[in-house]
Amino acid sequence: MLQEVGFTLREIGRLPDSPSSAPVWRELAKRKLGDLDRQIAKAQASRNAIEHALSCPKERILDCAKFWAVVGGVICGGAGLCDRSVAADRAQSGRWEGSD
Image (cartoon, rainbow, N blue to C red; front, top):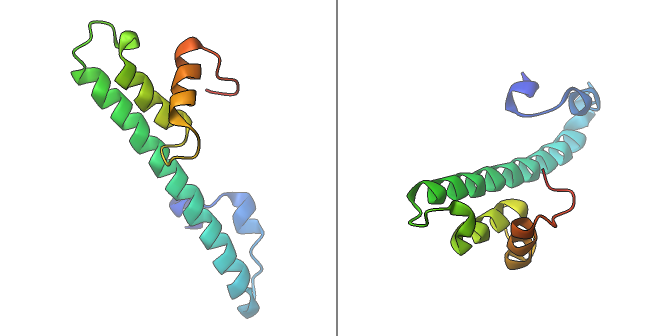
């Protein structure tokens, strides 16, 4: 059941099975909320990039500065985790190391 809400088997296995495990559970749950928030922000930024690409007036989406700014948001995790303009410049030029 915990896998259905995003917990890995490893995380589930770390939970002690005793009444005193509440503090461990709360800490794990707080970390999981942070992980989910980052995943949601990145997914929303990805959606925004695709949505813009579909409505962009540019003939070639790769020529659109706004598209690259939105892609920078995806690279940054969608939550302002890095300088989006730098990320967009790196993505556009293919110099982003470690990107998928």
